[in-house]
Length: 181
Image (cartoon, one colour):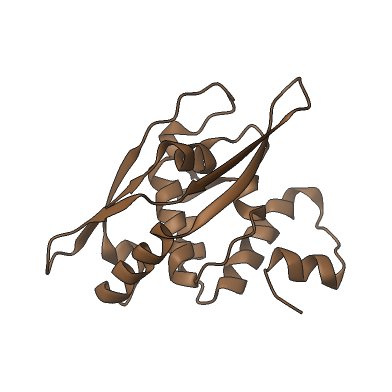
């Protein structure tokens, strides 16, 4: 986690932003929370050893309306999703292919305001390896956005803000936003 001018920013690896998998806005908030909790293990070192992580959070951090049933269902949904991502091995040009589940398990007490979920080691690599570049943005803004598309646009704007913007064809933008034709 980076503290800039009193505002909390998180670092998100660019391959997380560009990975093609379908998530809801609430599931994206869970991903932001995972990334925020794993900030201390971010690394540009491809040989970094990533371990399974337990993320323990108060549910209101994930969803402002505190709909705990929806949060639990979103976490369950994420635990059934698999992501395929590539890592370019520095100085070799070789590409390492990876497939992982994002969450391997969840724990919570009935009527509790807290939830705990397990992030497998391969998913920890997905969330923490920044050797291929990263984007920093304010977590509070990202979580406050209501739709998955506004969240993705915010990430895109943050990613390109220091480069003077970007241009894209409508087709490439649809691909980035996972919009089918």
